[in-house]
Each structure stands twice: as structure tokens, then as C-alpha cells.
Image 1 (cartoon, rainbow, N blue to C red):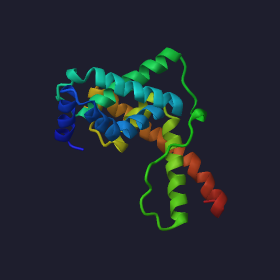
Image 2 (image 1 turned 45 degrees about the horizontal axis):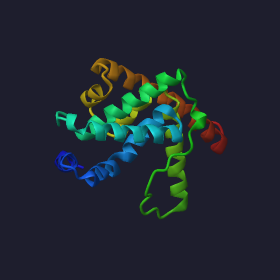
Image 3 (image 1 turned 45 degrees about the vertical axis):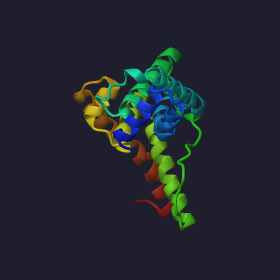
Image 4 (image 1 turned 135 degrees about the vertical axis):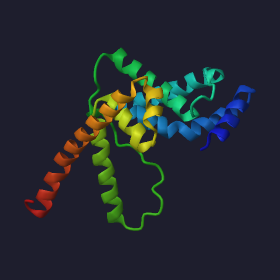
Length: 194
């Protein structure tokens, strides 16, 4: 997914080839959905916001100047649309509303037990991330899952670099605490006290 390929599809879309934008949607829809669902913690709402994100991106495509990666530009739109929705609702959504995320193609999993353990770990980590404040969940996702730099996250969120670093630090600390609370009781129950 390099910017040259993205730029080609952007140019094609601006030239009137709407199918070219479909390629961009297909390429980034899972990433956008992941960010949004971690913030709103509701699948239906996340799908709606993700769809709105792509509509906004399509309508504003002529304003994309290529000063950042296309994916960062999309993340910015998704992040702001999600914050707008959260503010509009004037409430924080509980993590209980979130259905399990589909992780896509699982590849060649040879051992069912390994697969179950992997899924359980993913579930525990995703639950922990989803229990963070929406902006922190997004920042953690950008940094660790999307491997964006602090500068790219600054561009997306509009927050200062120091603020991002503090949120990352506190988010990691909170995640550690949440994961420790989830995993330690299981270890103690499964293997006796540690």
C-alpha cells in the first residue's frame, strides 16, 4: 500500500473513474472500522461512521494535497467524525455494546488449540483497549496496530506531540493494569496461586 498506488487511484477518481475510489475504500475500510469501533464501541455505529468517513473523503478528495499519506488523511476524517458523534450523543458508550470483531482471514492455523489461545489473547487485548477512553484507544491503535509515528498521530488528532506521548504512556500503563487483572486470575485459577 504505497502512496504512489493511492495517488494513482486518487487521480483516476478525480478524472471521473468512480471505480478507482472503490479500490481505496476496499484497501482502507478495515483500518477505518477498527479505529472507529474502538472509539464508539458499537458495531452498527462504527459501520455508519466508517461509511460517512468514505463519503466525506470522496466529496473532499480534490482537497487532498498529498502532504501526508492518504491513509493518515482518512484516519483524520474518521477520528474527527467519531469525536463529533461522541460529542453529539453527549455520553460515553459502554464497551458492553461491542460485538466481537472479525479479524479477517486467519491464514494457515494448524492447531485448533493454538487458534483458540490466539483468539482468546486477541479478545482480552481488544477488550482492554476498548475499555480505555475513546481518544486513548484510538491513539493506542494508531501507534501499535497501524504503526503510525507520533508526528502522524499529531497530524490526525490535532493534539500536541507531548500530549500524544503522555496519552500513550498512560494508555500503556492502564492496559498493563487491565491485562494483569484479566490474566492473573486465570493463571491462578488454572495453575493454583502464583
